[in-house]
Length: 116
Image (cartoon, rainbow, N blue to C red; front, top):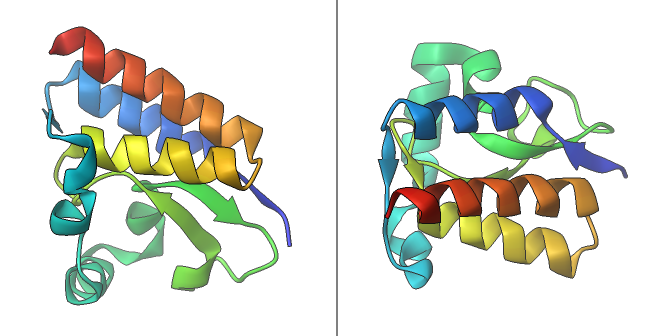
């Protein structure tokens, strides 16, 4: 399976930072801040997969677009980008050697640290 950078999500995340829609939180806060499965389902029901996908830096191209399995590396709570989510995505992408996702997350991490 091939996981690659979701370019539209990366562009969306950069816009969120520029628009001030971010949370500067501690690196270990993601387990508390990441959306629950119920939150994901509610967002999906209201907005659909196209909008849902904007909140995930990675896409699994061998999974159908209209499934949660298609989207990897979440970074926000469907309202704001979270520094802890970006750091988590950056770290997990590095571990799995997804260089494009790691690089995008590092860029976002730098943007967020620049506004601290």
